[in-house]
Length: 94
Image 1 (tube, rainbow, N blue to C red):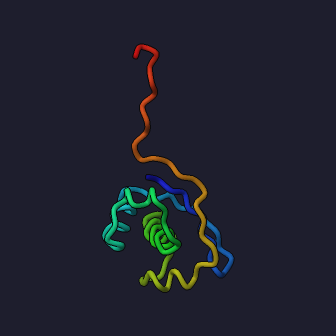
Image 2: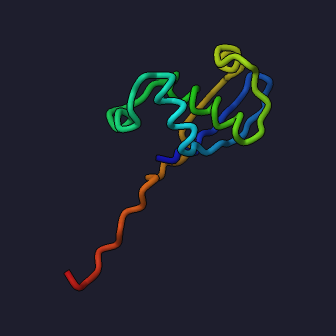
């Protein structure tokens, strides 16, 4: 699953990040949950952790501590979602 997250910091800086497999696996390890659990919903801490990891991956300066990153957040939202496994188009030959 790929999520595009809009991150707004308390200092007014706004940017978007996109999750990748590394981010999702990091989230699974931290939260002790499976990615499939996201289908039943997720909380703000889940989104914040994914934004934190994705920000580090994509070169945005973040504090060493996740909690310090959360303190700097003003707003966080999902802009777009995409499946990591694209669906196969049905052919007319079935």
